Length: 113
Image 1 (cartoon, rainbow, N blue to C red):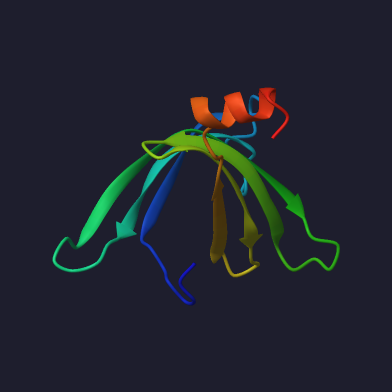
Image 2 (cartoon, rainbow, N blue to C red; image 1 turned 135 degrees about the vertical axis):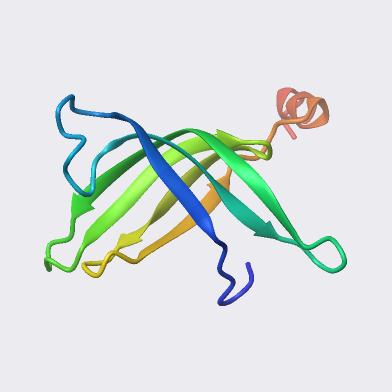
């Protein structure tokens, strides 16, 4: 985690969860998109494509936008997202990647470790 780190990104609706709701904003459904991963010098930024990104938007009880939740996959693996879509249209989301089980971890769990 890097406090205050921001990345350019783009999401595009591929298929609405409810047919005919494509014109609503926000719209639950399957999205595709990308984000720019910030890397240390001299590498610069790396474009990472997101696939199979399913997002849902739940209105907040206080009427101040929507809670965002979902899951997807990219070159780093499967991830979950959560965040907030504010009434002014600004979006803040955080990703949590699933950890991969290694053969060593699987063997240790079988042996009761």
